[in-house]
Each structure stands twice: as structure tokens, then as C-alpha cells.
Length: 173
Image 1 (tube, one colour):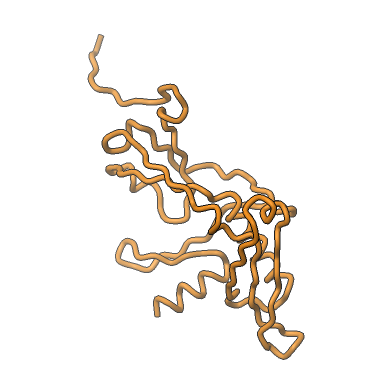
Image 2: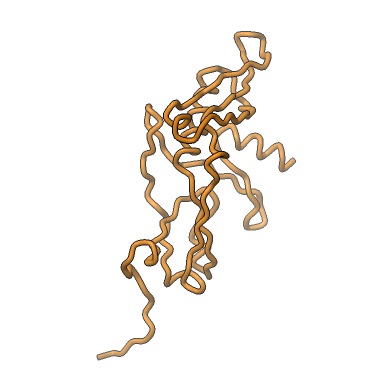
């Protein structure tokens, strides 16, 4: 049943997860304009060196050869009695930058080549934009962000300046 819920969530670029003793569903709220360019989304929280355990972030990038530059999307072609068909979406600038690397996927619930094309464009945009993972451990501050939400990281080791802190003590004068 959980697998079916995950498939249904994939129709709207969403994900299902278990929280608060129930199955929760969230959608990718990132935004792309008509040309596939990223539109910034306001973060729901900011994590700083002062709000993470041991005050450090760990960064990890994806390997260049694993980034998709071409996507083959399978969909149900209603113009052909619902038989499977494919649409291929490529980004020439990514191919010249990373080489040719094709990813195949099934667009669950997709019934037109134009919708399948949008799925492929979204995948390629994410391959271009989401190239780095940040890991950290936090306390109760971690409850502010749920899966699928956008948060910001203000790391003084990367920026070269102290951007935040915590109050260690106080006085009434």
C-alpha cells in the first residue's frame, strides 16, 4: 500500500513519508519558469554553525558522470489506445559539460507527450541545480523543517565571516 501511495505522489512530483503516526504527503514546491530556469523559493528555516551539533556541516557532491543529460520518459499514449510510448528530453549544454548520460523513468499517471516532456525537463533541471548534499545534526531546531521543504545554510566556514551565534549569558543591566 505504501508503494502505491509513493507512485501516486510521483504524479505531482511529491513524496510520501511517515510522521506523527500517519502517512504524510508533500509536493516539490520548487518553481521553474517556462524555460526551465529555477525560481528561488523562500526557506522555512536557516541553519547556522550555532544551531548544529559540533558547529560543522559536511558537504558532498554528486559525481559528474552520474548526472543525467538526457532523459527517456515512458508515458501512456492516449492517442495510441493507452500503449506505452517514449519521449526523449536532452539539454545540449549539459551534454557538452558532463557528457552523454541517459536516465530512463516511467512517468506514472502521465498520458500525453507534453506532460512527459515537462517531467523530463524538470528532471534535467534538478540534475543541473541539485549537485551538492549538506549533512548536519541538529537538536529541536530540526523539527522546523519537514521533507520537501526548503531551508538555508549559513556556514561561516564557507562564507568566511561569522553570520550568527547563540546568547551564552545575559544581564539585566
